[in-house]
Each structure stands twice: as C-alpha cells, then as structure tokens.
Figure: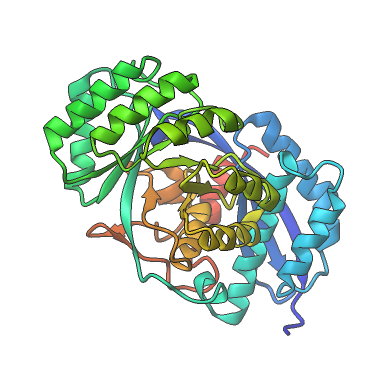
Length: 377
C-alpha cells in the first residue's frame, strides 16, 4: 500500500450559467484534495442551492477535512466509513451526503492518479467498452415545432436516444396536464419515427396523483417510450405500487436517494426498474458502487445521473462502464461552462458511443483558471 496521504481538502463553491437549463444560474460544490506526493484529486457534491452549497462546504471544511488529512489515499473504504460514522447524527442523507460524495470522489481520483490507472480499472475493469449516448434535455421552448426541431437536431448530431425533462424552467407548457404530455410524445414520434429511444422525465416540476400517472404511463407504453421517470413523488411508494400494477412501461426513479440503505428500501418496494444514481449525491463512487451491486443482483438497470459538471460526468461514466447493468449514458447536449470549459478534454460521444476517459483517476484535467472564474466561495 502506498504511503501517500491526504495533505489538504478544500471545498470550492461555483456559480455558473447553464445553457441546458434555459441559461439559468446553477451552483455546485467541488473538492480539491491534495496529496503528500503533490498530486490532486477532484470531487463534487451537487448541492445546487446557495444555502445548501454553503452548508456542504462548511461540513467539508470544519467536519470532514480534519478527519481525512493524513489519511492514506488508497484506504478509501476506511475513509468512507470514517466520514459516515462521524456524521451519524446528521448524515443519513441530506447535506452531509453531498460533502461525503465530494471527498470520496476526490479520493478515488487521487488514488487512480497515484497508481496510473483509470477509475474503471480500480472498480474491476470495463465490463462495457462504451455506452450509447443519450441527449438529456429540458423541453423548454415556446412552440411544439421548436421543441421537436431541437430533439431532431440532437438525433442528427449522433445521439442514440433522448431523455425529455418536462415541467422545467422555460417557455413550454407541457406537463401539468396528462394529455399535453401524451400529445407531445405522439407529435415527436410522428415527426421522427421509431428511430430514437425516448425517455420521459416527469420530475419535480409536475405533481400528478396515481390516477394521472397511470393514465400517462399506459398511453406512453402504447407509444413505445423506453421509460417514464418519477411520474410520482419519489416517496409515494403506495402510488408507485398502484402504477407498477397498471402498466408494463419501465419506471425510473432513485436520483434523489442518498444512501445504500435508502436504495435497499427502494429495491424492496419492487416498484422501480431503472435506478438513477448520482455519485455527487449518493455518497460518492463508493456509495454508487455499493448500490450498483444490489441492483445487479436484482437484475434491474442502473442509470447514472450526471447533470452537473464534467467531474461528476467522468465519475459516472467510469462507474457505468464497470457494470453490466447500465444501458445508456446521459450527456447534456448543449455546450456549457462546466462541461466544455472546466476540463481540458470534455467527455463527449464518438458517433453516438461514449467511452470512459483513458487517463488515470477520473481521466480529466481540471482547468483551475475556470474554477477561479466561477468561484463564489
């Protein structure tokens, strides 16, 4: 085992415009972890709201960093448990999980760089050489024609499928009424035909009851949609049981879950087919890997939620190619500061296929000038 240890842990709050979210300002928390050998690993906790980012940074700096400084970088499981046990009173989800995620991700990055190995190799190796690229987009244009043209443009650019986020910020009026969703997907199919896979993400902006979700799912199943995501509030397991009994359309959920135990409960409910996991939320690479093992054993699908910076995208991609349970990989289709400026070589697709970076650790080189440009804390 290497004698290299953690020398410092620095939380960094960023604020930036996001073209993939109607140019709204978004926030996140990065961690820069320096080692005694002079290396640096990067991680991210996707806290997003200003107060949540400040709280996450405080937990990292005041609570977690003193526990990790001096810790051997290769003893990642021990570090993960050290942080989890420290936060026993406030850490079963919530702000502590963002802080935990960022440090764990940075440790894996630093350890991979120390060994000269990409993260996926440390996770057991690539099970899949690449994954089909999915354009994860928010439907936010004012007219039907504009939204269809945008989807068609992504397919023409090589994406193999699209995930359509409804009820998001913008000018679209698709979502609150079930018929508006069903009619929209019918129009997309009519314009583009059966070629692109379509996932429909209902998400937090729309609140349906179980009867509405059932009606939507049955109609979308008939239209050949690949899955419906969070058509009900994630904690409404009884509603999901009703939905599961009423349709064969795959149901996706989980991106707002925090812990391994939380995913165990969700698996036990037998209501979810596609489990969204975010390594910037669900206790890092270590948490993601533990959850993935459960999902593999249950013969369900893993889908990495990577709608933030290139740091989480890279971690998500390594984790995704290291499991047979992944089927696609989500990319934000519009060029953005956190994807195309933050790192020297952005993660992108090659003719619709996404390959994990070949370099050591996360395989990305963070441009610290860009970090300084968008830093607010």
